[in-house]
Length: 428
Image (cartoon, rainbow, N blue to C red; front, side):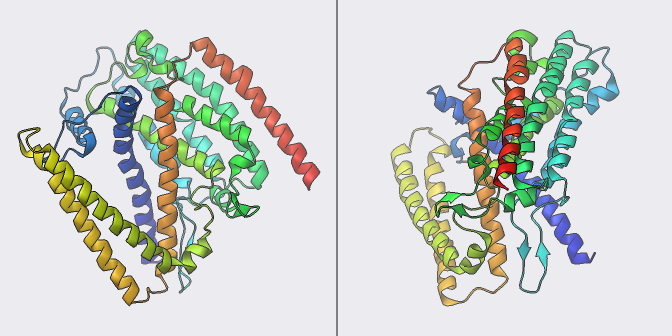
């Protein structure tokens, strides 16, 4: 392995970790603004840095400062080692499991050098995911038991029971995909979903295995302890569940792990059932061959959006002067300057694209970048589905939770495997 290989490996790992770390604050903001939208209220909008509020995004920064500065205590009688270990486990597992997810198709440059789209390119990728993600329950159990609190312990026991009940149908749903594509490598599964059927329908797994996709999605809600499956954190019954006795950034790590688990679950769900990084109707070869054409189009769209943003924010500034009677009155002006600056840069790059032919190495790099953005868009869409469901459906009772897992999803997953096997045998 050369020094360049080591550098690329490190940069690829940092990129994947940074994607998760950057999406988590965005999801917290999306949760708050989404719930506000559903409940017909403004949501967070007051926190600001200078004149910028950015629709409440700075509330996430304020939360981080608050969590780091709050009093950190440990309840009497707690087991110190496991009490401190518990929050680290789910965070670490979320960052480890995302390593096997392919974020783009392998880039092959003209000189033959390749850059794969996974941090951990192993053949049993989906098996690695299930093996590692099942360890998350240890963090919950350690948190509930080590806190020396009955409410925390009850929440931890509920979480362990839910994990056992829903991991089995989740694995069985994934087995249907493995049987369909003949591989447990997530990169191979994503590659198999390239192209279209009948000239217009993407070859996504959801059109082949709709029932398995639905089962996997439902079980993902339970695995991440999200409503309507958040019995482990039921505030009306258990105060706050397994993390009741946690404060400061240790509690923040549990919250971070919940959103990171959402990202990982939706990333695997996207890879199995919605084409992963594949851009609908544009395969990797097409992106590489027409990289300059698509770059010019994207720069042109960016230029137009920048001009529209300039006009809208300038009008917002003119209409809002005196509203806050402080520096926040100038937010529209700052955003307008940023928009016109973006438009100017896009116009300059567009001129350069027309004036010069882009180098050969640009095509694979462009294809990988577009596929990464497409993958992030898909993941964010399904994260929004998580938010939408949380603020729409009520929490299940515990018996309903167990009945759905054991009496409905498990038989359906087994029946789907049987049907898949029959169809594969008949269609061979």
